[in-house]
Image 1 (spheres, rainbow, N blue to C red):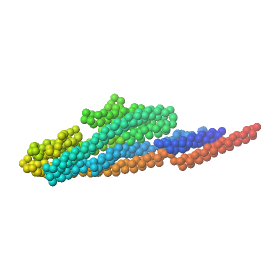
Image 2 (image 1 turned 30 degrees about the horizontal axis):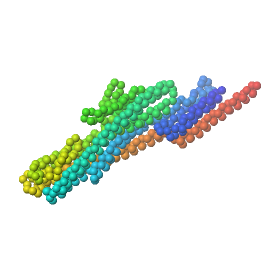
Image 3 (image 1 turned 30 degrees about the vertical axis):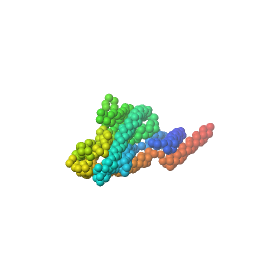
Image 4 (image 1 turned 90 degrees about the horizontal axis):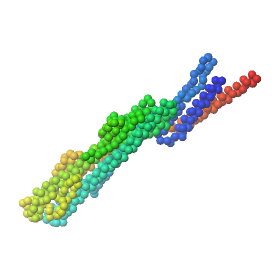
Length: 454
């Protein structure tokens, strides 16, 4: 009887729908889970004018996913990763370089204060010794800031090294999932769980680098960098690696098959790009600027001392030594070695001392900020760093907002809504019970027919 087959198809369809709803509810708190549903289709009538139809079938299982929203979420992850990697380093530099005690400005000010104090009595050994002490303190401030920057550079390299194995593992796993998905799709198996696992890996990868994702007809997804280099093609994946150049620069390589691509440390985007951007556009220029200032200051002070004479009448020697990125006091330099007098001056002459004091108002070429007064150089550097920090914080805040909005947009389509699933349970339970009732009625009619024939 067609009435029984119709009802049976309806009960089977209701069971499939209830199974999808139960799966959704079970994964209500599963990160990255994409809700599922069933697509029901009516089975058309057979031959004959009295046939109303042959029931219903589950034509397919639905996966409620929006490729556009997923792409938006991954792009937002790349922007967020880019900005989030930069800010901790900038904040540390701001705090240390702006510290009242350890800043370069404090060291320079202390040195020139000691020179000014010595003008009261240029022959005073304690005042002369204070100049050497202040010069040593200034050197320590320079070296302390330089050490922080050197440690940051090392940290950037180590962090980049730590990201690459994670990315390589994700790429390999995405390629494996591509193969499983394409094979399972061809055999008609539900691959929603495999796709969810792959999307989670892609989302994590997107935070590490800026990527483009392309869907293929067989269900696989190809992934490339924004700059075009392939990361995953079907079941093939690339491998990231790094190496140090002779100049101490860390470079990124991408190997795909037999091809090797050298990547731009900034253009790669994501966390890797954020590290590259900070290293290339902030840290290294700042390092060079500190070197420029230390080297210029040491050169000017030593040149001026060489133009004067000591208390014993000899030509002045160098007070400061700048070598290998470190500033220090000349070995065995004493208070008597300070050439504070002019070559023709008498005892107590402070003409050369005044010229030393004037160095503070002379200009220096500092790579990150240009030509500035020595007294103002560090303030200019800290100011530019502060502006850059504010800009990055603003962009990071925007990236966080965009990422949150993208996730919410994705959830509006793909996440499980418990209220909606509760309604689905009730509706499909009613559908199942109604079809069971139809079968019961059909059985009653069938029994009645048998009794009439008996």
